[in-house]
Amino acid sequence: MATGPRYKVPMRRRREVRTDYHQRLRLLKSGKPRLVARVSNAHVRAQLVTPGSDGDETHAAASSEELGEYGWDAPTGNLPSAYLTGYLAGARAVDAGLDEAVLDIGLNTATPGNKTFAVQEGAIDAGLDIPHNDDVLADWSRTRGEHIASYAEQLDDPLYSGSFDASELPEHFDDVLATIQEDHE
Image (cartoon, rainbow, N blue to C red):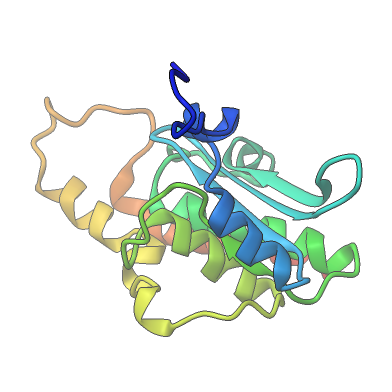
């Protein structure tokens, strides 16, 4: 691999495609806690971390898997669950005494309206001060899941037979959001 004096072996986490060290350094120089948002097809995770001498220290965390405790019956990998996960992490961070953060999207692409920015919007609505541009946030109708509900209404019954009726997703979203707000007042 390293076969000459002009070749530099990349750092291990860069080789594993896990860390962008240039971006991490810029975020650490801000001096603010990082809102680390990580999304997959099935789940969403959010953490508020600060750097420490023995590694990053986590002050607040939330996962879309925890939304079931608040009555969430819908799948956990969509835009509404990303917003609720961000709101839950933001509320826990405010309870822990944090009031500001910067968004850390890792190696994800910054596409306007995606789940990563839904996590950020949820944390902002929970009371955290996070610098952002409103153009990257999704419309409130998409955040509530109205696009999912309208698509579910178009499907035939044999094609759509799940345990959760997605046509009722916006109302379900409002109920779960109210439950989280009551729990963190």
